[in-house]
Image (cartoon, rainbow, N blue to C red; front, side, top):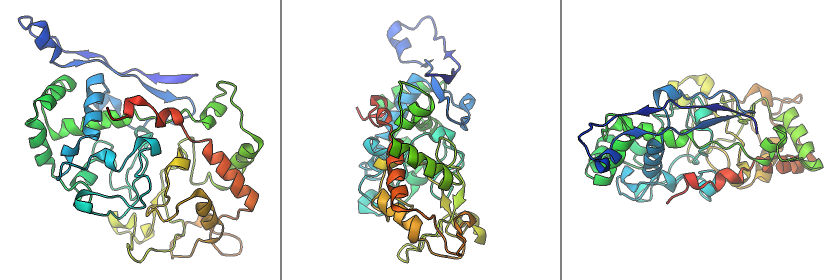
Length: 350
């Protein structure tokens, strides 16, 4: 497999020569991890120069991802709403859950290929990966904690003190280092080895079946205006004609700048691992891919700001699909499932 490898800067701190070897093992020794850029992917958006991935940083980030101390009740870790087997989504829940039984307003998004993205959350409220975790951590209905409380708890833990010392040159248990460690973990979460990937990269003699190829053809004709590149998202914000849920009245991107042009717009999701990451849409209203395609064919409504790309010649909104096109599209979408990623022990809880 041809890949463009990004080799991270190797940095070693030489400890005082009067310290014994046991003490040295507890100090900062930044052994780099290689981050690979798949041949069929666009350029990485995350700047590794500002936060190079190291073994100790990655392992610390993984510990923090599965750590209940990041929540106010000690029970809600990041992984609570992001389960690996389901592309790090909250399987079976249309809306995310949080501390004290709180129910969120949106469906938990997959966590994959985040280093290639330029904005995060359904409404794009975070524009840097290092800052994204602050939103769920401080949300009263998600993790309900303050950054200062988290640092106090981690600082009181002797094991975390050692882990921060190994992971960062200043050795500080700080908010900045905590967020950088989480980013190092997330940067490594690259999903790029699905059947589709191996087909387009001509690896292992992988071929697509007739129905999968038909689905790919339909996808290229009718879906790529939004689900572009091999990330399967153009990372824009669009209104796809969903009927407004009156119980939530989620205005989407409009929340950020209160621009009327952003009303009911949400970030175009990636379709990688989509067969295992349901339920679908920002509020998880659709349980299956079949229902999603039925919606695009005949369920979109004019909610005053629908994306022009969905306007049909008869002045209705949607994507016209016959039964076979739906069947073949689903067959193709299933080729985007990356079992190597879903089962990768590097990202699994210990």
